[in-house]
Image (cartoon, rainbow, N blue to C red; front, side, top):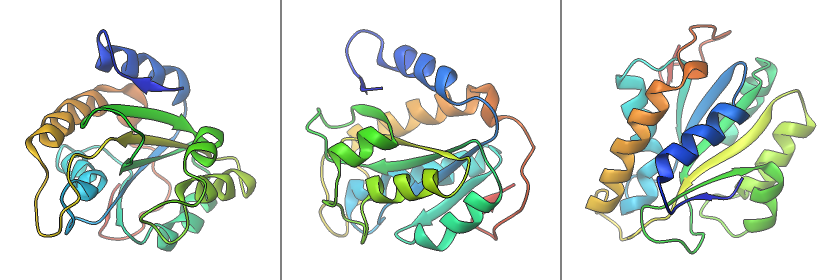
Length: 182
């Protein structure tokens, strides 16, 4: 899928998301909010829950706690929302499938097991296709909040994701707990 940078990045990203995310979609916010921009995925997930987007999981650093149940629910797509180091300009966005995740992030991750490995596991155990909507962080310093660059990207992605039709459906099989807006 590649990166959404240059030209009209959010328009390009919108087209990629609409082409790839057909059917039932679950979003999972990842990261550590105590390390600046690393908390991006969690903060975006919180914003989506507040906006009423159904089926959003705020997993933080414990995605393994939720993956089995997500696969069992039979969603067509699981999209990891995360800050990832991919060499882009701070705040730039990348949308990757599981193969691209595994190739780019084999085991180098702030997570105990890399997103690439988790994505391949998700796809091997069910019908769910895994994706990464990642954003290049600017600062991962402890004790900081999101940088202004990441706050701007968060606002743009929130608006974009809230407008996508697959994310507006209320067809959510099972509520996973307080972290889920179902």
